[in-house]
Structure formats: structure tokens, C-alpha cells
Length: 204
Image (cartoon, rainbow, N blue to C red; front, top):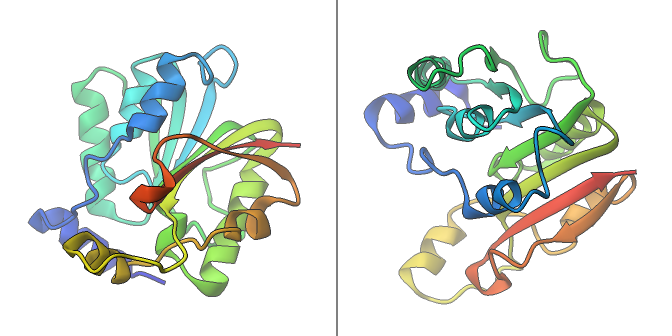
């Protein structure tokens, strides 16, 4: 499992290349009304980082709990929420997403958000985070998962080389992890040719 000090170091030194990623897919789901504060008001952002998604959602009326294990990222998230005037609708908690319980984070939530955290874990840690997603959701809850997703058939390009260095979800693994309790929809964007995927799952 990745170490929190490694992530904190990358945030502090500007090496966190994933920081600032909101995701067009999440933005589209909100602007289209598929996800709204009326239907899914209570959100948990697993691996919230600097809070970009949490602040985006809070500004649109959602109430968000962000969870991360990097104190550096959480401090930046709190500062961002205060700057944007949504600190009353955002709460940020330090926690281990693979733990059986995260103090201060009580489900069920209407929307569980994961913008590239599950795929960063492997083996038992990945299974443990999947259990966390199930524990924090309830019937009718949505789980939005954005991840690196491919079967290893990567081109010999710079992008392909970089993707080989990163963990991923293999095709079908989303069904193995979540198909027992979620109805899984793969969104049209990003397309399979990008080697990334967005899934919107509905808890049964």
C-alpha cells in the first residue's frame, strides 16, 4: 500500500501530478443533472487530495466529506474550501481507506466518489477499499469511479510507457469487486482507447 509520507512529500514539492484533476466526467454528470444535490446531497470523496472535487460539489449545493491520508493535502483542501466560501459544506478527515472503520466518516452516503484512488492500490488493499465503498453506501447510492483501466495492451509510446509504471484495474475487475451489490455502467467518456475509464455504479 502507498505510504502517506510519500504522498505528502509529493504534494509539498509539487510532484503530485494528479493534483488538480477534477475530471470532465464528474463535471458532466453534475451539469447534466444525473447527479444533483436534490437527489444525492451527501457525498464522500475517497482520496480527496487537495479537495478540488469536494469544493466543486460544495459550491453546487452538495455536502461533502473528503477523506485522505495525507495531512499536507488535507490542509490544502481545508484552505481551498475556506477560500471558496464553502467550508461549512466541506469537512475533511484523515483516514485509511482500507480500514474497517474510519472515525468521523459515517455512512451511508448518497454518492461515493473516487477519482483515481482504488486503482492505486493492489491486492488485499484494493479489496479492503472496495469493502469501504460498500460499507459507506446504501440502497440507491451512486459510486463514481474514475481509474486507469486496460488489459496491458499498451502502445510503445511515452504514454504507454508511463501507464506501464502505474497500477490499473483490468477489464472485468470492476465486476469482480462491485458486481455483487452494484449495477455497473461504463460511461462513454473516457473511451477505452484512452486506457482510462469512468464507471457510474448504482447500489442495489
